[in-house]
Each structure stands twice: as structure tokens, then as C-alpha cells.
Length: 340
Image (tube, rainbow, N blue to C red; front, side, top):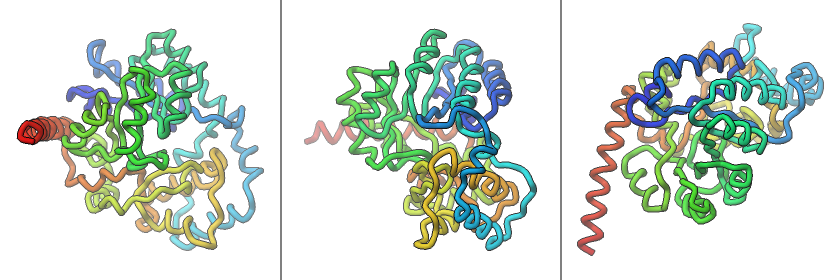
């Protein structure tokens, strides 16, 4: 999907934070072969602070509260989730300093054009990437996050509003973008969160953003190739069919509402653990829910822009329609301003 975005005129960024170093090596190699030296592309990693030093799943499991383990076992039994003995994306390895450095070693070796940091912008990572000629994009949800990212050396800031899918904060995109533009010190700012049409691009430019960062808009694309169950959920969903929950990773995550998020929000449910403990607590079960398409619990990270998904289109068609909508909206806005 990221390759298709770059081929269609955007900057495709591959989110690979849940990939092993070998998988990142293979993915980056594929992107370089497909896009050559002329087209822009990048990868997105998450390097949160406060993670354990080593990738030691046993050490994490030994600290999981029995009541939380029992609750997960209860969900498995209640919804009949098969235990195939395999881990999920979140439990194949522990989110740790060891993991982050191993992933970054691969990225640095390839001297990629763009490195996006979804959570956290540690100075050591930014400096190492800059030394290899990479442009650093930092996703931020508050002005103080932007200030920290700039101190670390971020080149571009993504103002990600609470409308966004995935890890997101509490400030809406319309409120957040002008605040980040004000503190950006001339750095380009991209608007993220609920961006689904060309009108959103025009609005983002009016708020001071240089462009937009999109994710949910491509979830139903032909290149993303969602399974039938997920595709149906995405196309049927409206903006109110998403919710913010800590139940997947321990950090706030906007996702499609399902029995999974409802169960964790119930009064008698335990509070989700912090990352990476929640990852390991639920990771195997989440993987099995996806592999076996356990309908009631089936969900995906998605922003409120999911309301605009209508079917499974190629990425190139999505972007072409997006640009055409923006051109029409810009002309209409200019005409209204002139007439006023």
C-alpha cells in the first residue's frame, strides 16, 4: 500500500513497528526496488519511553496480574476463540529498548529518505537518522510534544488530532493544527486525523498546514487487501462507530468499536495495563481473533474518517479523487471569499 501511495504521487510511509528486523529488511528492500532513487518513501517506527531494556517475554509474563490473565481467559471462552498456539503481532516480541535499537539498525543501514516516529522522538534515534541523510517526521498530539520533537531535531511535525486512528491524544484536529503551526518555528506541519476528502486538505492548508497525513483513507484499498470481514466493517462504519481504548496496547488507540472494546470498558473489567504489559497480556488472543475472524471481537485501528469509506478502490484512484476534490473545494472557497 505504501509503495502504491508513492507511485501515485504521495509519500508512502510503511508502518513497520510491529515487524521483526528481518521483516523490516525484506520490506525496505522491496520498497527500494519498486520505487528506485527518484520517488519519496519512508517507514514509521514507534519508540516510546519507559520500555524495558530487553526483549524478555518471560519476564513480562511473570509480572502479569492474575486477575488480568483470568479476564483474558474469560474472553477467550465466552467468544470461543480458538487457541492455535501462535502469537499475534503484539506478542511476537516485547516492545523494548533492545527491540527498538535492532529495528533502527536495519533502517539506518538503508539510509531511507523519511523516518517517521509515531510515538517518541529520542534524540539518539533522530541524530543517527540525520547522520544518514533521513528526514525526520514526528507525530505529535499536543504543543509540548511538538516542542520535545523539535528539541530532538524533527524536520516535519504531524499534528495528529484525536479524530485519527491508532495511537492518538485528546485534542481535535481542528483545534490542534493551528497550535502546532504556532510553535513549529517554521517547520512544515502536516494535519492528521479525520482527513478523508479534498475538502479536508483545503481546510488543513487554511489552518496553516503544509499538507496532510492520511491512514484510514487507505484501509479499504485494493492494495491494503483487507479480508471480507474487515472490509465489511470498514465500509459500514460511521464516525461514531470508532472508540478510543487502551485495551490493545496499553496506550490510547482509536479503533472500530466492537465487543472487544466494550468488554474492556465494562464496569467490572480490569484497567488495561501499561505498554508493553498489555501487549503481552492480550497479544496472542488478538492474533487468534484476527486469524480466525471471530466476528464480535474483530476490530482494527481506524480514525473517524472511516465514515467516508465506500468500497475497495485502488490507492491511485483514491488519491486522484482526493486531489480533484481539493481542486474543486479550493475554487469554491476562493469564489466565496471574493464574493464576500
